[in-house]
Length: 300
Ligand code: HEM
Image (cartoon, rainbow, N blue to C red; front, side):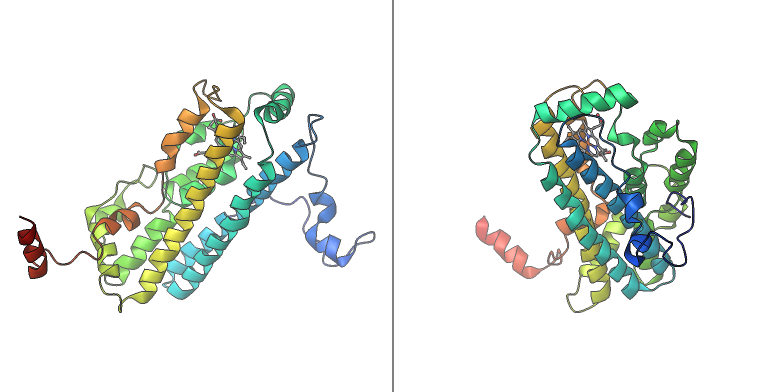
């Protein structure tokens, strides 16, 4: 499925008159015609650039996640890990965009936002479809967010399709299941549009992947790369929350309730849940380990 907006014209086969090969390839004239400030605040350029760069990175991550899904389905684990490592790398510049906005005080933000509301109406970043597409692909499925896309029927359809499809995590679990780490059939037969319910059997599959430090190293590498992806994603959410505290405080936001209070619970939405919960017992000695009994006895 093509996630991107269809270009009006295909890229020219060669540089057209008035372009250099670089400008023709990178479409720099188009790119630099896309920033249209609505206020006279000098910082609005930084705001628009940061958000547009984030949009580009979210789309890049979407493309990478879809490539990783295809590679996992083709049982090409080495290439899937390589693709997911690129996702980890993309989170670095994405998350660094927050530095470009660190100068912003509440007065600065409101000067920009008030003009945006006056020009376009009441907005929320929840109306951004790239972020939601990425979140669905990471396996965090919340159908209620579709409501924001009713004015954009093509995007609503696209997100609704992704909501109903397996996420990258489902493809990872499919790979584990096909390679000696059984995952219950119910995990694959569920309604993918519903929030994922973690499974004890999936936890055990991850425990078994990590049980021996000398075996299944490629799968352990996959697990650690996924943990890095989840960390990059959660780091973005933390930086966003801190920027909101810094520039917005306890004001009511889009839903009329305190914006920070809306965001705080979303910090617990960490992708690949059993990869994390299994760490509560990965590496534990077997329950019947005599050494453990001895220690327990010594304490009594
Ligand atoms: C620094 C000033 C910012 C403030 C005060 C702020 C505030 C908020 C608030 C209150 C929400 C919750 C929904 C709502 O009430 O609208 C939200 C969600 C969101 N914002 Fe921001 N935001 C800021 C900057 C940004 C920027 C620069 C981006 C993009 C680069 C962004 C992307 C998002 C996204 C993707 C969500 C959805 C988060 C989720 O679903 O967990 N925000 N923001």
